[in-house]
Length: 225
Image 1 (cartoon, rainbow, N blue to C red):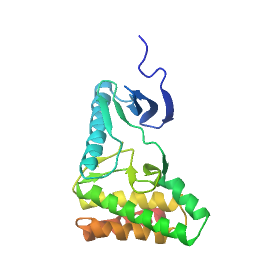
Image 2: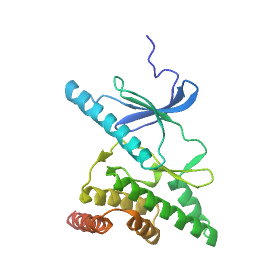
Image 3: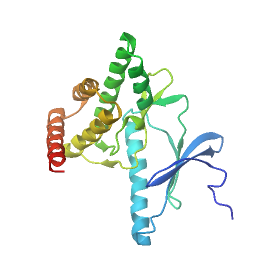
């Protein structure tokens, strides 16, 4: 019997999953398939893969319920560990958009950068307010629709639910490291992200304190290394 993946267009493959483009009924669809790890015991692998798939879908639905734009989930196949979700069209990654604005500095581009940073910060605050930890925050996992009214969060493959300020501080630290390594000399821009975050996040002071602690640990590890 033919594999359901036959005829699907492979977009990318990572360490945890493959991403395809196809159609679900008549809708343009992205399918994320978590594949088995041969080095793990089969029963353990099945249990971990099932849990990761469940956590990813749960996080996306929790964010959508809170008003955050994420791809709509059409169907979840827990046998093949495939998530069928909406293909977001007419969009660019925040990474590409930021780099484009940085390449052509002007008053307008500076204003656009500030607006985007504020949207990212406020969106992450809403996400953390419902105790969703993304786990892999980068500017490549933020999409901007044509018109730039809203941002869309994607790739919740490492996400989980936690109310701990430590986990939220680490989430911000991951974004900060990714942000500054991808977009050098944008410390001031990231400060706008944090200021916007603090304006909407519950227990913002405690979370930022944890972020500072994680930063300090990171610097100490760097010095030891």
